[in-house]
Length: 356
Image (tube, rainbow, N blue to C red; front, side, top):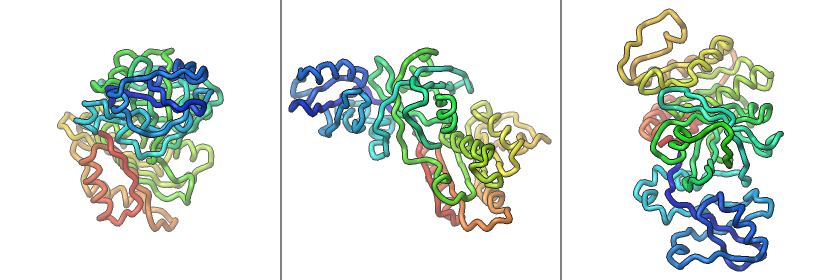
């Protein structure tokens, strides 16, 4: 997930002031705080004010930005965002739950996962971290000197943040400013700020664990990789039942875009209750193989028969499961098709997130 906002206006309301202060970026907030605490105000002309969404926010004196609402960033002054709202991360996710705090992180490592995907590993400046996330959630990413707010799902398990203070993002190349920055400018040691959000996450920890079906299209694999890692980590630690069946169906255009395939294959090698299935939609030279991983690699689009195969794998157990939990993440057309097929298979618990 990533956003695209060409102009951002943060609105800060001090409890000691009657006027609202305006600044053109989140990273002006520390400077703004000096004005707020000294009862000074920055005035803009009426035109600029009218372009800012009218919502209330509060700046705490410790700059944690608690209570800061996504609408406080305002997109009325973003003509590109108005013309193409699909690219506007903040608008797309305005109804999603967000944690109150904004937290400093440092770029710890940058790796290439494929010709078009970079892995950016962020490390919390605080240890232990002052925030957490659920498997499947994303973060707003505030980049210095860049007014566009990015949005990227974590691909790492929540436990990795707790134990090592790091979280992983896999960013697909695009001309969208935050993604472009991640590919062309991001380097180890860069300082960013993030805020956790999202209502798409693994719920197994909060209710009776049921078989899990995960369906990903392209870079939509990120939140589902987080869920797989969370479940496998839980099995290893005895938090999750070792016999919990999980099936991943993962589709990309080309084989070299199957990021995390080695991670999934390693899990499948030690966990007989985890089955990864791969689909490459563009023709290539994939040949039949005796290798189990390659036998599960198909040069075609995902079909209803594949969902039926996954259902069969998930329900072949001595324990009585009346239902499964399905998680789907990918482009909107894929979401529409897959959810329709799942409902036809009588799957009631379908969680999905669209990846534009």
